[in-house]
Length: 108
Length: 119
Image: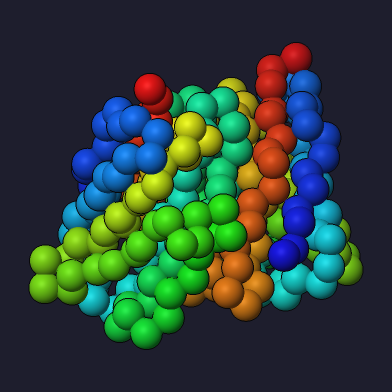
C-alpha cells in the first residue's frame, strides 16, 4: 500500500503569504492519480487539484499543484482568509486509494 | 446539480450491524464508480470501499475487508454499504463520493452520515 506523508503537520501563516504544502509517497505514484482536498470544520472535503496539477471546477488560480519524483506539492500563492483549513493529498494505485494524514493551515 | 445524500447512520453496539445509503441525483449514477470514505472524530480521511459502475469491480480497505459490503441499485440511483461486526474504531462520519472527473479523485461528496459504535 502506498503511504502518503504530508508535511508540515501544521502551517501557521498570515493572509497574503504564500503556502507550500508537501506530500511524499512511499513508492511511485502516477501523476495522473494524485489529488488534493480542502476540508473545513463540519464540512465534507472539497476537491482542489486532480492529476497532480489540474484545478477542479471553480477552484481559484491561486491554487496550484506540482511534483518531482515521489514528492508532490500544493502551493497557494497568496492566502485568503477562507483558505485556512485542513488539506489532504490522496492517491490511487491499482485497487487502493490512500490519503495523507493532513496539513492544518492556520492563521498566524 | 450533482448531489449525494447519505442516510442510515446511528448508534450501534460493538458487534452490531448497520446499512448506510447514499442517494444520488443530478448525474448519470449508473455510469459512475462510487466510493465510501470515512473520518473518525478529529482524525483524517480513510478510503473504505469502491464499486465500479456496473458492479464488476469491488475494492475494500484492509481495515474493513470481510465486514463491510458495498452495493448499488442503479434503478434507484442509490449506493449502499452494509457494515457488520462493528468495532469501536469504526466510529466515524461516513461519506459517499464519486469520481466523475476520472483520475481516481473524488469530486462529488455527500454531507456524511455519523456512525457511533458504543456500548
